[in-house]
Image (cartoon, rainbow, N blue to C red; front, side, top):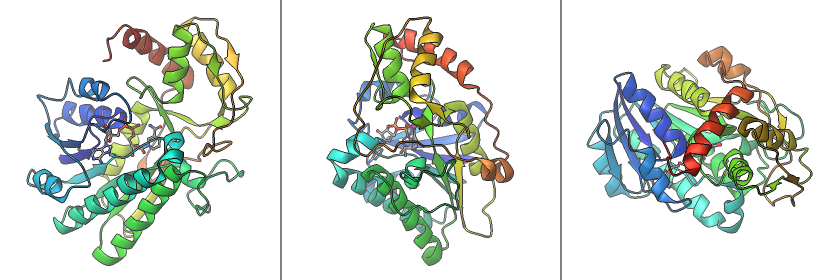
Length: 321
Ligand SMILES: NC(=O)c1ccc[n+]([C@@H]2O[C@H](COP(=O)([O-])OP(=O)(O)OC[C@H]3O[C@@H](n4cnc5c(N)ncnc54)[C@H](O)[C@@H]3O)[C@@H](O)[C@H]2O)c1
């Protein structure tokens, strides 16, 4: 297959692209090395890919860049991961999240439709369910009250893709990822932040009292689900939506303690203030992905954290890969 991956220099994009090239697929990637976190990490993410994939540096918002990217087509599938990914940061710059996550998706989807590419896989988020207390969230639940501009931007992009299915016949698979963790997780995200604090002997700051539930899904499992979506022929529905989750919630206090166990370190937990925009609990049912994509999350949390801890120690010494 020939696959376009936007956001290729990011955490999930680089894992996905490595898996694609390892199995012999042709990969073209787009990334603008956004400054949301240190772009040197993104540069390092591409170390194993530079020789094996075509990397275009540019912005998904630029039509000229998209023309350059699609000149490397035709593609059998386009996976759109490029986005501003943070719930917390979105509170302070909602307009940037709207622009990159909604308008960027509109530009890309328009190009996919215009160049006649057969399928688009879009990385949405469990954040679209907002604070709906009925857990686990299901794809049929209401999604009209996201709690953050980030969640709203993902929901906005989903609606836009639906409208483009109607108007252009664009076929699309929407994957609502939950809390993805694994080697190369951005330093801004919880498991990485807990590990860094623990390695420096600092307290691990919880969200509130630590009773909030999060659904952690390992990046290898997320890549499995994404590849299944890439390979699956478009359904008659035109737009399919799947939660990509472990299906199980873990309290953030338990997660912080488990990080300590994985690192073999005694950790101090510190109560934190709830952040505006963060939902109280987020757990997704994954029955639809199991049934229709054959998705089976394989990495148990304890194993995933042990693997993460080994990587975090190396990353802490400067060995990012
Ligand atoms: N990591 C998670 O827990 C999680 C959960 C839910 C959804 N997602 C979604 O999955 C996708 C990938 O997330 P990630 O964790 O790998 O984040 P990431 O920040 O590591 O990767 C995103 C990449 O997109 C690039 N990018 C940003 N704006 C761009 C633009 N305008 N043009 C081109 N490239 C641009 C960034 O430079 C970055 O390399 C995102 O859409 C994110 O919202 C992630």
